[in-house]
Length: 214
Image (tube, rainbow, N blue to C red; front, side):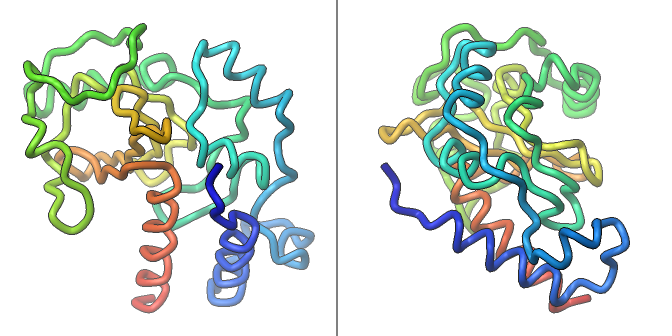
């Protein structure tokens, strides 16, 4: 099990957001006073019920996040809310039109059916080679995505400023972490991360950078 301190991490994010963000009218006064942008944590029973509905096992870092806060209010100006676990759904089920639009815009042609057989993605025959695809961090080219994975992704946030958080069960590491995507209309692909945890750490850094600019 990961030793990552979700409680401390999210508490710091809450305090930074509430202390340095001027526009707080969209938040209830109780949220502001509590200095907590999260919600009560999800129980194992709640998480297991969703896993049974979707016929999957959610990745460890995302599960641990949910146990601390079942969803989350605004992360950056682009994502308004991370969904409660009961609300998560396959991207192809909730936003089929988005996949179609993206595929048409960039010339892809893929099925909208979620994958029945997740695997680690490290194989030949994909639209993007492994060398190009499995590059994360500053060296990553956000256009080097495998659009064929979109129909298999799980959406875990609301559609914010033309953007959304996705988890990709087609790429799973040895710790059973799924690849995580920040997918936006203005990107030629997605900003991809090895796990939900690494995506959230990056998004917190993005928030701090945006805060300094504003």
